Length: 333
Image 1: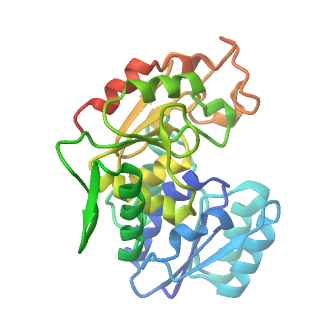
Image 2: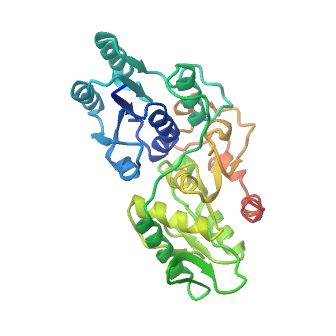
Image 3: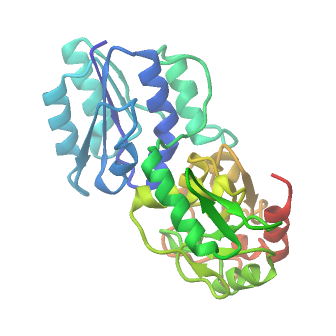
């Protein structure tokens, strides 16, 4: 096995994070192979310092098939794994492997049960195909010491004067018996996943200790904007400080978990049993919703327009009360 190609062009940061355990398992199973990941440009920085990944290629939106064709021609991989099947990409991967007598795993979505986490499903299929060891692992994003130190400095600046750092130890430390920080992530890429702004404000005002946010929340201090790896480093500093990150089913919350932070994730239209984070607390709103389709979420009546047939706002998110979320934040990790 000389070259392994992993294709993830589903479009979201969270999708890439869900495939990371499979990337790391493939690198471990084939230590002499050069592993390349083909993904969209916004998520590519997550792989920049990952020792498992030899190279990253990127594809433009709406031009993914051409990028896959070019990668297959340039790399001639001995093993190709793809999470992506739209635009005939799965068939393209199969045809290429058959023509060259190599291996392909082109459908990681086959027969999905409604109660198996997506990232774990990927790993079980790859293990059944003999491509990786039969060991389930959670996502991990690799940061270097300088990035971790910068993330710690940012958090200390936000928490002053109650928290500080010392020479040789950039990690946030309480100046006295302080409650660990809570970081709120109020936004999501899709309107149907957004918890109402008034509830974020209510949560911020009800929590003890420092409350920070990624994006504006009434009653929380907003952390300075940064790039994707800087955000990961800030979350890693929150983990070091014993804090918790709260947000919807979205990429930044998955990123927080992937650098070791405790998370409370809010699931409305998506099924936590299938799309939940491998680590942390997954809160499911309105679990009995008759319109939820765990294995076909894009076909749900609410998905694209955030129009709920049960209430003026998504009923599943309204079912997640401030008290319930606050209880999960304050519970022992």
